Image (cartoon, rainbow, N blue to C red; front, side, top):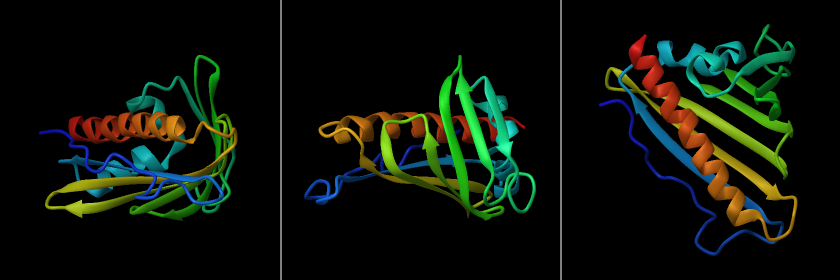
Length: 162
């Protein structure tokens, strides 16, 4: 089968900490190997191939060029989206980014890891952030979890079709 979602996210057993820290975790499985999944996630320009986004590009190149650490990526659909900075880059297994703008959160960081799973790939996408607007944290966890699950499932399925 194409992809399966694993743990879909949480805020921990006792809720957010004193700073309003929130987190989620999403997993998907692809029958495609890691080396086939990585370029789809690691290269910003390729996101429009497999996701619902209409614009996926770089505002600034990183190191190594073009998509490495320091790259600023812009992802939008119909003019609405986010700007993200790559903060960790370890092809073909780990990508981390922080959101610079586009979501009502603070200190957002997501880590995407790809691990060989038999002949396929286990994609794990974990994110943490602080509430920007008091009282919105639980809703934002649900929104981010659903959005990221859509991305994880989309890339898993697309990689299988290649």
